[in-house]
Length: 67
Image 1 (cartoon, rainbow, N blue to C red):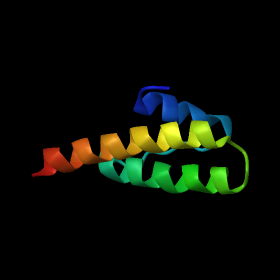
Image 2 (image 1 turned 120 degrees about the vertical axis):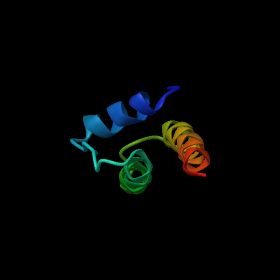
Image 3 (image 1 turned 90 degrees about the horizontal axis):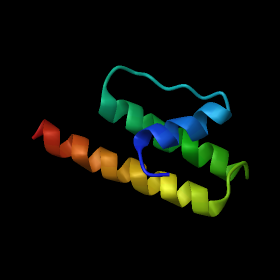
Image 4 (image 1 turned 180 degrees about the horizontal axis):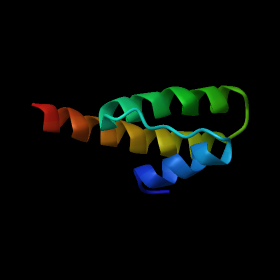
């Protein structure tokens, strides 16, 4: 798992499709949904932390673009 697309595929496995229209909002909502499925025990810790790291990286990139 290396890209935002990979994280989207994890969420897709659980029927979660996210498109708000603004990339930063999409990433933030993905973080929320990822945390929910992790708290329910549906994904392992390693997969969760890799996905969360990718989302945080993408979020910081989007923040820099807004400046």
